[in-house]
Length: 381
Image (cartoon, helix red, strand yellow):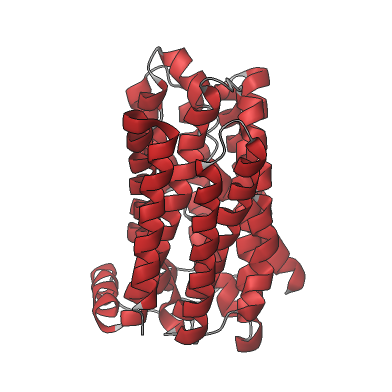
């Protein structure tokens, strides 16, 4: 089980990376298509919206279908659309393909409930923390990898590379993953209606989903807007230099297993950990506001917001998985769909705030969002 969990963590990291490769590449993509960087930035939140759509439409099927084959088929479609992104000569088509990249990159959200179902109750938090740690490493490494490959070989090569990685994963998953039995025996329509029922009847699910959506909005806003900030004067960094800042986010990956060990199905514990995480995020944005030319403050801020978000997400995810074990995929659908809708909105807000008022206005605006999340969290029961 230990080695299978580790491989699941690796798979989560390598597939979720598809969502983030585009971020450091925005200047290169804008130059290639002859558009403004702010317009090129639209693919970041279009990809997240695609991911949210995939979470809503396909993740619930994890309770209805055999998970192994669903994971393999979905990853295969990822290979196809990644190759399409590498070949396209139209920015509009690239936007469509980025939506599809998000749509078919939901594999981590099929693997996480599978890992949770294979773990005992006392080890579930640790297993989720380990898999989430792998996922976060994939996110932060993707930015550094795409920054380097984009600078050395062009942005299209990154998508060729991503397609190759996913193809290799398909071959290994076929041999390593364990087949599972569906936990739901109704129709797709009744499956989707049951999600609506769970949202109505489980206030803990609603509260956890809203809190995580707001937290991820503040995270996504930073990582997209940071590219615009560092590529402009006085820094004028290239994609390699910008991508290296992603490595700093590994701090969140290191914190994930520790948070998992402390997490439980208790609302009181989740509330405490969430508020600590939000405090870390707020302090991170204070550091961003005073960054100026002192990039050490930017580094400190990245560490704080990444650890803060992981604390909030893992504690909330452990809670919702304890509510109704037979419906983990559907609960995860609500939780992660909300999260990535929040991420897409946060990315758009970040670009908008930076466009109208620069870095200072961006930092102040997202700080207000974090304070709203803290107020909502304090009201949770």
